[in-house]
Length: 322
Image 1 (cartoon, one colour):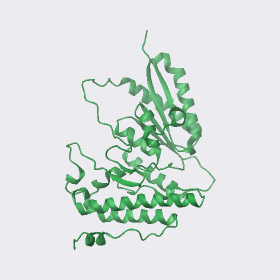
Image 2 (cartoon, one colour):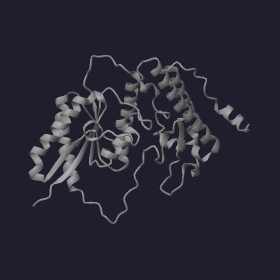
Image 3 (tube, one colour):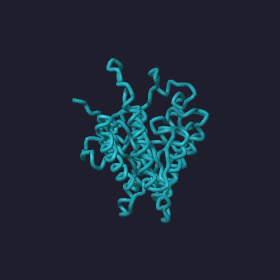
């Protein structure tokens, strides 16, 4: 009896690509009908809304990562006009899922929709963040675009078949090799900036390189300079503090909270939050200006006074360095 190989295909995307997710499910179903017997292979489509059980064990995205992303054989990610809801670590759940999959060498097929929509952009922050992410993706990989849903159906069908044939041709990984360490993105994990406890304090973990050296040991980074490291942590603390306060005030006013106005502390060109200490010292002033601007945007959007952080010079004076 032939053994059927099954691949888990995880479908990711913000809420505005629900129709594309449904099309992707149909494409997978049709692929199974054509290839199940010929290739002795079947595909199982997965999406967080249908394949992850409710749980209060950890951060919501961490549960999705654990239950779905980490066991994926292939990720299909789709964007249109929104980037999605921030997770605290990344600009959105979909971005975090892509980043985590890439860190675990799980292949990602990334699509951007160019379908025209006459409706005005409702959230300019969402649109701006998406365009920044798209620009980075074009530099770091080979995403694909589509101009209609029929176009998407055909493209995905062709690309899916190519990728599955490629996966089937790969040799099984040797059992003698030690598994690659995973990136833990939980409330108690390493290499994260997390909200901890009822006090909403920030716990900044220092990532380590392949030699076991932490960022504070690496020359040429802000992590290697104690004052820069301290000020960077201070700004991250302020960002989290202002965002939490903003959410509370919006809830008090019974108005919807737009998380896009409070997206990631690092901004373009600075990587994800857990790389904060590895920013080059030569870019420190640029990073500070970007971080301060994002703090101002966060609190200004929530009608909170924005004179809530001191300057780099004031920081040095407070530490007795002139």
